[in-house]
Amino acid sequence: MPGKGRRGLSKDEELNLVPVMNLVSILIPFLVMASSQMQIAVIDSTMPAIGDPQPQEETEEEDEDPPLQLNIVITDQGFSVRHNKTPAEEEEAASANSEEEEAEGPEVPCVDEDGNTTTDCLGVNSAVGGECAEKRAKGEPCVTDNYNYAGLTEYVANVKEEFGKVCPYMEGSADYGSFDPCQPGLDEATLECDRTAIIAPEGAIPYSVLIRAMDAVREESRRGNPREPDSATPGSRTVLKDNDMDDAMIAKALGSFNPERPSDARVDRAGARIARKVCMQDDMGQRSVGNIEIANELFPYVVIAGGTAMVRSE
Amino acid sequence: MAKVKPRRPEMDDNLNITSMMDIFTIILVFLLKSYSTESIAVQPSNELQLPLSTAVTMPEISVKVTVSNCLEEQHTNPAVNCFALVVDDKPVVDYLEPVKYKGAEGEEPQLTVAFPDSDLENQLITGLADKLETAAERAKKMGELTGSDELGFKGRVLLLADESLPFEVIRQVMYTAGQAQYGEFRFVVRKPS
Image 1 (tube, rainbow over the protein chains, first blue to last red):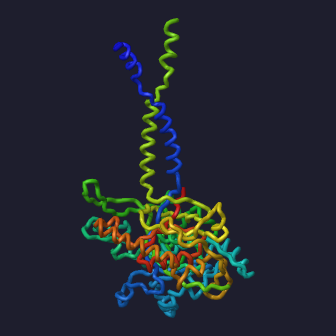
Image 2: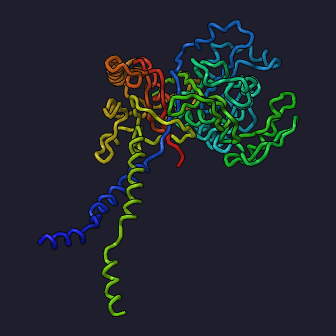
């Protein structure tokens, strides 16, 4: 008898894995389905300044070199971009516009196709602008989300390069070499550099336009081809082609070249990656300075202003 | 020869699934891990299409405010049964109503949606303000009791909104949240797949 039992045991020494297998093969499709949900991310934004002036204005009103203030108003005619650092020759023209008027929105509506009415206006993409213009002429409402986002990135990148102070953790900054991201008590949010933009959409602007405008001003990643080398010489300009840009847009970008403005000699090195210093912490809590490659940051922090309140009409 | 032949099939009639089991166990562990790290789940629907964005920041758990493009017909339709404004899975506003907005210059009217007047009090969405204030109180108490910054009140809102909604609707939600001490917004967006 004991011999028989032993023999039976030794025959069954392989575990019967088939039921476990069944279980696992049911679990796996379930988990695959659950994990293949939408990939989501978030965009940070701070409190909308509804009607209130920006707090930093009060303290630095008399400053020789105040921080760059970039306001982007989204209207149904396109983007209207203003900043507080107009070049000297445009100063007189802009001086008529006080801060309060700026907050109210654009006095000059952007006109598409027949060129910008002001240099600070970015129209909607001409193709859709035309389509909408037709409808609007008939008094029909037309809502589109096809704005000139590439143009906005372009414009904002120029403003940042010409007037903005690059954050010390970015490779392009003069302080990049001496900057220590791990210094105690450092809060990157309080660094003195220009990286906040104010976006004020009109009430009827679709939410997706706001998100895409925020994408457009955040970084330069969506323009150009990173595989093509920088080929611009001062006084000339190249625009690297991107899937988003058609020939007309490239021609427009090239046509807006102004040799007086040094920033117009910049290459659209969009899509190129540049180094950014970060403070890395290992499992032991040891902090060390590291470098990561990111797209050139423009204005990653966005304040959403209320814009003009819409009047309801019945 | 005659002896060996019948033996071999006898040896191989049991499939050796141990190695397959190894593979599956690894896949299972991997999937379970990625499943648990997902902090918020979003159920896509016709009324809630998150906008596409190039943002890469991962969401963290906080109060979730969902605004859907849900009109009365969809709300009453049992097949859809959506709610316009939902805070942490609790409905606040049932549906939006279609309105005509007049532009600032008094130009062409635009057909969009807005919160019904009954839910508004001077631009403040009353139901949302109540819900957020209780949430803020609760978070503050949690922070006090546990003494941890993680659980405490940080004034952050996760905002999930349909991409076709007009900014006016979003603005009213943001304004109300601001009045209820929530000053930081995280717009939840879809990553291109």
